[in-house]
Amino acid sequence: MFRIFNQRKQVKIQWLQDPNQSSVDNLNNIRHEASRHYRKKKKKEYLKVKIDERETNSKIKKMRDLSRGINDFKKGYQPITNTVRVKRMIRI
Image 1: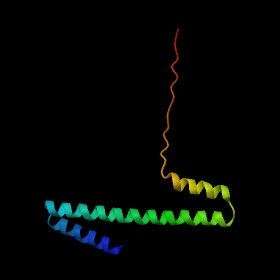
Image 2: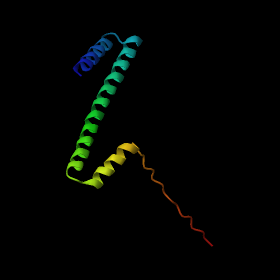
Image 3: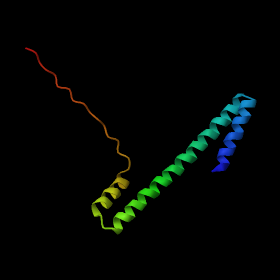
Image 4: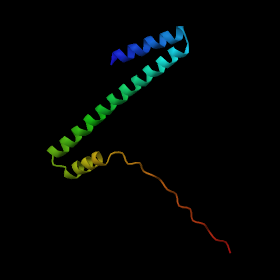
């Protein structure tokens, strides 16, 4: 974890000292790698918490919450679309 952070810091210092195109590209690549690393870490923590919730629901026999949680995992991300209906009024 600290390796990526230190590497990003060193590349940024290099870029500040010599702002050419290769140092900019290098900095962007390191930033992208660091962002991906932290995003994966956050996702693992989130999944660990959700799995622990499912285990406790199973142990204390909360079947409704357990089945809802399992279905959420199976379905994955489902975006909700908000539609607005407009009624046209006809004037006579």
